[in-house]
Image (cartoon, rainbow, N blue to C red; front, side):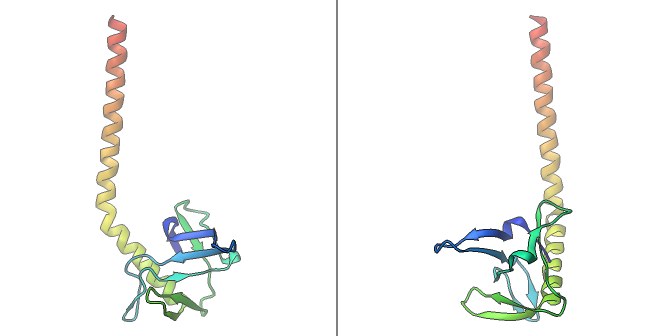
Length: 132
């Protein structure tokens, strides 16, 4: 299962000084009729690590038939199948990217225009210095 780094804490330290890992489930992670948004899981060190192909992601590894404890916001917990959880997170990630692809493209375009404008300003400044 891959989550954006903002949802993962690797090596966080509790008030008591104990180290732990935490993954907060992103928006729209739904299994059955239950929305697990903001639910938390606490993977062991050997099963959570930076994604080796995308520096913005953290990977959590499960056995396919494993049951995973998800701590819910209401103080309760729910056991879910790891494959179902992974599929639900993948779907939420895909939907998020599709919904925000246009916004990201617009932001990238604006960033390029700003960079081009700055470069034009620098070029004009250099030309003015040469003319003096």
